[in-house]
Length: 106
Image (tube, rainbow, N blue to C red; front, side, top):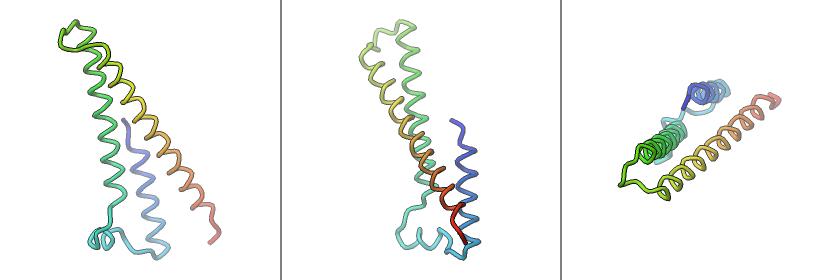
């Protein structure tokens, strides 16, 4: 999964926040807050891992591995598909939020 666009958007959001005089994310992290970029990257890695696992199971099944059954393959493929669709929706919401912020009058 290509994450360059999301990383670029996160960087632009941070630059915009710093230009507006907002505090950086470091104090929030020290105070027990969560770094949004880390959470987002963790979610991207989870989606990628689910897709790779499902793809690997599908390849093993098509190769005739007797330890892999069709039901498990189909369930894992559907889980990977749903997690990918969810990540696409998160990306769409981020893009919409970014556009809303950029269109705000200063």
